[in-house]
Image: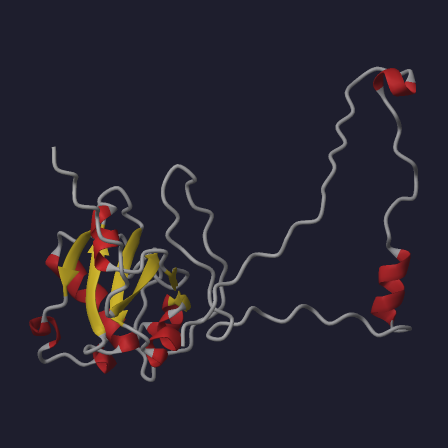
Length: 230
């Protein structure tokens, strides 16, 4: 039998892919035309209509979409990545919308074939969606800056979709400044060190009864950061 032709490697295409968690609008349903209009117009208000190519949805992942934007669009990366607070970007947020946020991260998928192979359905942008519409009708302009946020804790049984935010576009907040030596806060930190009483040994080690509930907490490694594409 002739040998099977090997599958070609998955190459990057001419787009960057972003994972959008809790996308706008509220309870976004890709089968409802009005929801699709609100969704694509929100993205267009942020990155523009021309660099915005498509979005991908997956019925088994209703709280996420994957957005396809022109590759190496620096303005798009700077404005789209991070946490979007609806009360800051909507002209007239409802009480239910005011406390909502949408978080956008670089996607682990880097090409359309990989996205489709993973079960996502592509919806190409239609220019008719933006006829007689401008961002100032629904969104703040200029579009407000987004905020730093950590990737969500994803289901380990599924493929991870969210990479950490690149520090060159969304640097993490600076750690709190240490109190000045001799200041009131420094003195309080030194004196409020907790109880110095030694722990009571229970069970066989302490000749008592009961279970030792002590837990050891080791240091945690800092989250990794993705490199910025030039």
